[in-house]
Image (cartoon, rainbow, N blue to C red; front, side):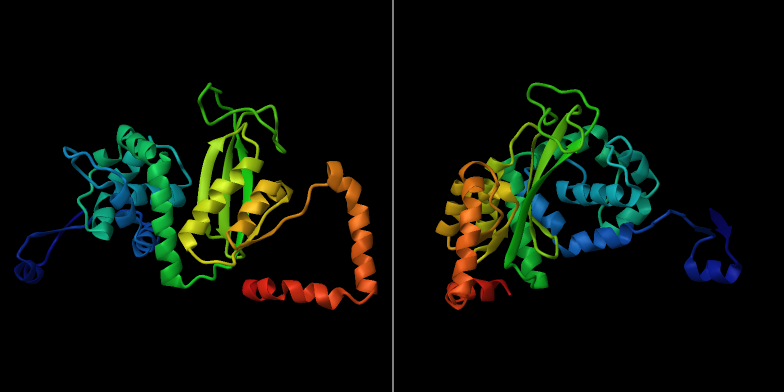
Length: 292
């Protein structure tokens, strides 16, 4: 839109026309501002390699603008981003202090970014640095970590080496799925470690790699890892205890555990009746205080 200025304003501004550009901002400014405060552009640029001939926007700024688009538009498609940026080019340039070109968000370029993010050697370093910066800045309590897996199914083609595979599903076993393993601060729900895996994988073997990354990232003893019965595998519990941490998970009512459960409950009731409750609580008082 062009507006003809009055002679007085023209003389003061040194131009004849005032050009007004209208763009729909929504919550993009808030999202980009929050991600910038978290240091996400710098962390991504630190760990994602940049080709020496690569021109245009850095991977870090490309990623947070794409994330802002996904969150504000509810659209994860790569093909929609370039058109979106064309309608927000001036706003995005002002918010990021970067030169924004729609071609920076072409389908091919976003595919390259996803390829980099899918590599564990890059993703694990990004995850570690982001957790370290976020927890230090916001002083988040990091005593209880909840670990769990979920599945996302869809009507997609299954390939031999693809993420989408048929596996055990509580939703619809007739559709292929991906598995997402997550470790997060409890009760805040802030993710500390995330793994995206093929859908046929069993949950049992996914806890140890996740717990190991969280342990090295937080670097403090006495964490309590909480999970479902699949986290109660002996190898997982032994690893957690051997690293001076604690675990809380129900034992699965299968095999010898199911047969012995009634006897264990009977023994527990007897100890309470015989006055051994205080002694039992005394053993666990120290870890309980650390959790509080």
